Image 1: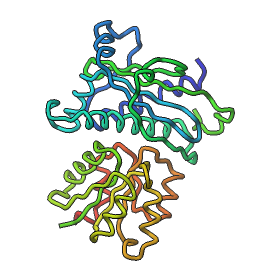
Image 2: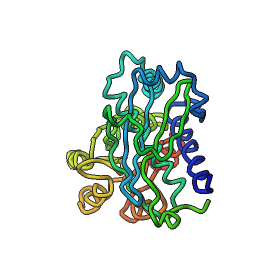
Image 3: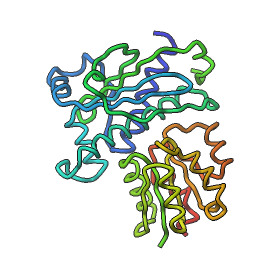
Image 4: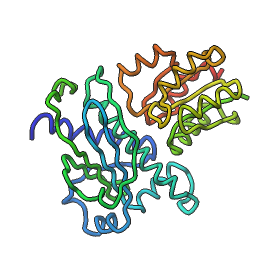
Length: 168
Length: 123
């Protein structure tokens, strides 16, 4: 693994923990795909929710954030301080989008140089095709309350990547 | 009672910001919400506003453009503006402060940071 790969690999869990623990007060663990039980994966895939976010500048990357409907409802109960039965589907989708938006911002601020401005797009719900793992570049697995969720990054290094990055 | 406008396209973010404002002592104020910069500008023109808390990345009109419109309008130019963003870095922060933002705060917002920023309103 290159130093850059290692740098990216560590930056995402840092961003996810900061955001999820700050917003939902939930402890987040990074896990490997092998750590996840088949029951947990089946539950996630049965009824899942996902959102996508494009990075427009200075790189053209896409982040995807996927979790089970059950975990999303659990996070929403914590954030909104309301039982899930009282939460509208729109609020749940908005929460998922806002978490990814914030995580992506924290991630980029960790890896990019201080003077490097970056621009994010607006989060969009994943379509059925969007859940498929095509052209995946990096993937991180986490659990919250023993329930898995994933963040996937799609894209590639631009030629001037080293000029954009914080020293690592 | 103070009038506070919160502009963010995410309902979750608006709720979270409002909750943080209430935690730091701004309970029982008049909170008005906008989902983009254009709506926020209209709300600012409707009535004197003590504080605008705005996201940066919004559809139709973003937070930076909103800030420029506010500073260009003599009736609105003294409105305190706090910018909250998930895409913040020192370079962008310097540009927003130059445009007159009171402070730029990175998401996720915490009550502690808001308390420091809004100490002038909390006396």
